[in-house]
Length: 390
Ligand code: DHB
Picture 1 (cartoon, rainbow, N blue to C red):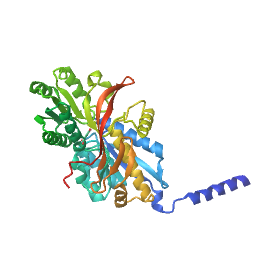
Picture 2 (picture 1 turned 45 degrees about the horizontal axis):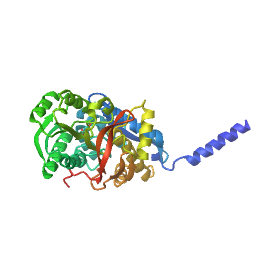
Picture 3 (picture 1 turned 90 degrees about the vertical axis):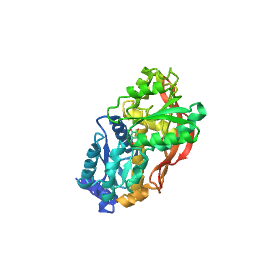
Picture 4 (picture 1 turned 180 degrees about the horizontal axis):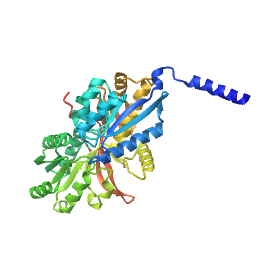
């Protein structure tokens, strides 16, 4: 009896000593994570959710005594749904941060809500250059299409590729890729002889590829969003375009690590430019890939996963910097200027633009241990988004 009283008292004292000083710190810190978990962009949602949960498993679910609560919502990649969910998360759930955003229209639809409610919007996937200009509360941990497209337009003419046809998904990131690739290739003395755009929803690549075959360029430059690359690759090979002497070059969205290994040996040799490869040879990345794979039945992380993982880190570190207190403006200020080593390499959140500055790699699809990987062979360091208008 006596011993029990003593123990209870001991626990009470310990609990008192550990109790947080401010009341705000006893309420959970809520992250509203809006992702496409179903529909055409579902692999983006699956990758980012898994990465966010991995980050929390590795770093704990409390920061400065404050419990972190992740509230996941499926927007099926329809921007009207994204906007409604963001509104509900801010008004009803009183989230401290909005995060996720699988495609550009979803990120843009949420921007006015972030601005009005002074809630940081951490864009983990969408990659049209102008997104960060849609609200001063947007911070991006993914990439931009101009950032990666320019590197390929520098590489191509030095490697015998002068005449190119481009084929992009007909919306924000595709139009960015088309423009920045073309402008840079032209500057380098090359030529984009035809710019083709394919619908984002239910694309049929066949008629476009037939046209490319007839045009016979040195190469076809492609951007399609994550999840659509395998279909492009399959149809490109089925039509014998490679045998007809047309090279496939692309942003890394096409040889997406989520699908690459199932594309078959026809993908060997395809050169892409991007900010992340699961084969990136750093200790931090090896650790990340292993832990991600172990937690997700062998799934290989792709660039979406890294955007989600780093986005969680930016949120955690910002909350730490505010001593667990949070607050939209204080969090935003603490997100700006963060520098750290990501699984992709060194990264920096530019305080001026709130966009990510990072290395861009040239990669070639190769076989390693019987598996297909994007193997990096060159790097352009610390690339800022070239698409910013200010
Ligand atoms: C976007 C979506 C993607 O899946 C991708 O790979 C690149 C950009 C976007 O909608 O911004």
